[in-house]
Amino acid sequence: MKRILALLLTLMMALSLTACGGDNNADLVGTWKWTCDITEEFQKGVNEGAGMDIPVEAKVEMTFVLAFNEDGSFTLSVDKDALSASVQGYIDAMVPVTVDLVYQQLEDQGMSRADIDEAMKAQGITVEEYVKQLFGALDVDQLTDGLDQENVTGYFRAAKGKLYTSEKENSFNQDDYAEYTLENGVMKWTGGSSALISDFGDIGVELPIEWVKQ
Image 1 (cartoon, rainbow, N blue to C red):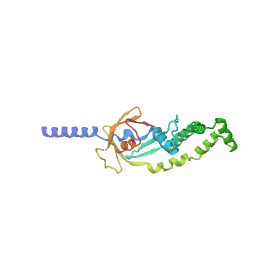
Image 2: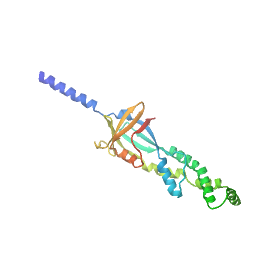
Image 3: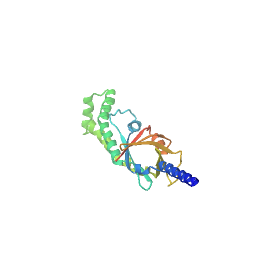
Image 4: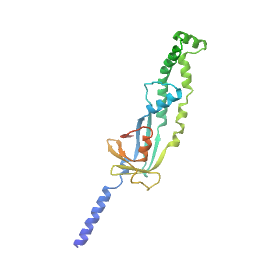
C-alpha cells in the first residue's frame, strides 16, 4: 500500500510540475502594437537621395501589429495607414526647411532674395510652390504598398516568460525565444535570441520592446 501511495504522490507531483510549466498562450492571445521611431534611418535615406543635409524637426514612426491567435498562429505586420500619415507629416515639415535651403544656395551664388523671387515670379511660381510640387510628386502610399509582402506569419508558444516562434506548427527551437514580462496590458521584450528580435535589430532597434494590447 505504501508503494502505491508513494507512486500516486510521485505522479501527482509530476502532473503539478507539468501544469506549472505549461503554455501561457492564452495570456498573449489578441492584438498588440508597438511604435518604433525610425526617423534616423529615414532621414539618412532622404539626405542621401537629396544630396544634402535637410535638418527636419519631425518624426517618422512605424507601428508594428502583432496578432496572436487562439489556434497558436501569429502574424506580424506594419500599420500602413499610420506609416503613410507619419511619412506625409515628415514631408510636410520638409517643405519650409527646403525652401530656406534653396534661398541659401542661390544667395551663396550671389543672388539676393528679391532677385530670386523675381526670377521665380517670371516663371509664374514661387520658391515654396516649386518645392511643394517636387514633394507632391512623391506617392507616399506607393512607398508602403510592398509592406504586405513583408508580413511574418508562423506559430508561437509562450512558457515561463519565454516566447518561442516558428514557421512550422509544433516545431520550436528552444534556443530561439524572446524573454518577456506581462503587466497591465504591456508585454515587454527584455532579452533572448529570437529571430524577430534580430530582425528589429537590423533597423537599429534596441531592447526593451514594449507591446501594448489593443
